[in-house]
Amino acid sequence: MKGWLTTLFLLNVSLLIGQTIISGTVFDEKTNEPLEGVSVYFDGSTFGVITNPKGYFELPIEKKINSPLVISYLGYSDIIIENPYNKENWKIYLKEKAIALKEVVLKADPFTRAAKLKAFKQQFLGDNINGRSCTILNEDDIWLSYDVTTNKLLASSEVPIIIQNKYLGYEHRFALIDFMVRYNRRTLSPLAREETYYVGTSFYIDKQKDVFKYQKRRDKTYQGSVLHLMRTLRDEDYENQKFKFFKGGFKINPTSYIKVIPQTLNTKVILPEFTVPILYKNKRSDIIKRSEYIIIDGYGNFSPPSAIYFSGDLGSQRVGNMLPLDYSPKD
Image (cartoon, rainbow, N blue to C red; front, side, top):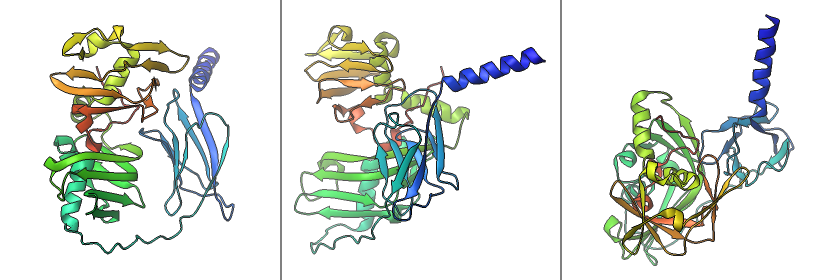
């Protein structure tokens, strides 16, 4: 019995050693009182906790993730910590939001709220089986406007947008920071869309964990996704993962053009100067470089997010197609 207990103790210690624990306490900036029930999560993941009655939190993760840590509480401004690993036992002070009214602009808005909401959902959630299966549970919290001088649809929300993704089995909470769709004329037609831009932080709650039907759908969504591509680049596993790369209309060996440099915890990837067309199961996308290199972590998350962008199939994917960064397909 003693030997069994020793083995169990050593096993537990080894598990703890393999973990990284982010901890801290959250306070009201004005009163210095601890805040209970504050959401603390890594952006784009299922890694999250809430603070206890003393405002304290501990967030264990198996390996470091290159996502910012988000501290969010209703009625307070979010705090985003880009590098939560450089300090132990954080002390975080949240500032209460000032009550702000949307500016009333005396311009004719040619579209009804219903029409703007339909266009918003199409461009935000996506116009495929994933996107159409999503339901926004708090639509009334979304502010919508159409700027007739620039032909832009604008949206914002003071609280996270709560999305029920019925196809993938997640509740997805998206804190919208900015949203814009630009059209080439005064319309909401997707055929006239020139650009869609949105940014925010995400947290996922798995509502259908280990349910075969949803796991199969998630695996299908993962195949050919940005997350799948980033992990393929990191591992240089091009042949097994079925991505095909091209230059000037000809298929190329990506190892001749893409430089992959393993680091201690992450992988540095240097893309070629030219736009890289790729095919995955006959669906084309283009990788367009905006920075010298990207860093890919152990989960497949790349940074900085502005370093590259995509057109084609990957560029058309929206929130309805997004999976948590800690998602792993079941082989």
